[in-house]
Image 1 (cartoon, helix red, strand yellow):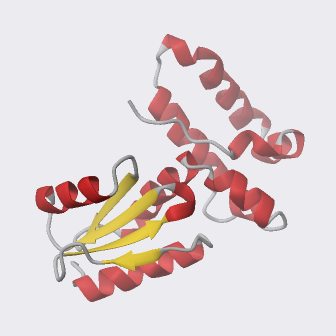
Image 2 (image 1 turned 180 degrees about the horizontal axis):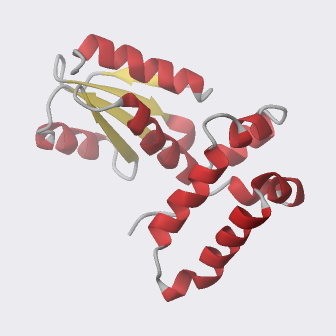
Length: 167
């Protein structure tokens, strides 16, 4: 069931708080969109109330060139979009920041009920596909999947820090 803009704005704010990131809120086009600017990671989460976002996309890209932008519409599922936001944050160094700033929680985050460690590996494998230039990385992630995430985390805490860019 679609949300209204107020509910979408509240849901995005809750999502960002759950990631422990600070953001500032702006409205480039009032009543149509809301932007949450996450300066530390160069990410903008843009809530919009319609699927046609060309005007908002132009405004965001003109005012914030070089930033990663994640669009969430009033029709989107927040459960699905939270991972798009997380992947964008990770591409800006979020997991390393989280590991250094919340060292006691990181293991629970990765191995917890959301199975984030497994999701990170799955997303990497999806991005790399079967491209030969990523052969070692693909095999490395597959081995971690077989040997166990906790074992790899104990051996190399930085293993889960990065998310590759999409082509």
